[in-house]
View (cartoon, rainbow, N blue to C red):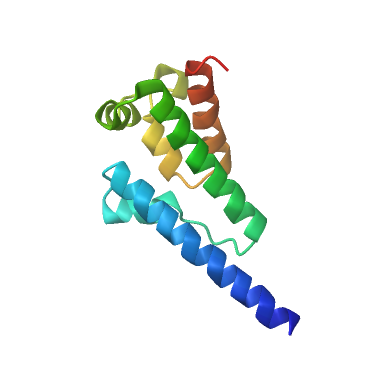
Length: 114
């Protein structure tokens, strides 16, 4: 019984995760391949999945608070940033690496004055 409940919970989290990522991908005008990379995780660990979603949500929310304009936000995501060794924030986000997501969030928080 517990296994069935765990499988159901995993499935629900997966469904929610997929929807959130799809909406975020559409908001940022990502290609299908980029949307796949946005949440490319082989982890079945629910906590890791939730943490990744939280980071993505926090990045999006803070960028919205800074720019108040989705077009400017999308432009910033695609501009090379010296502080990211000349990479675009979107490259870091799409890398699938949690540390890179945290680096982008740290940069956005710095820009936001936190």
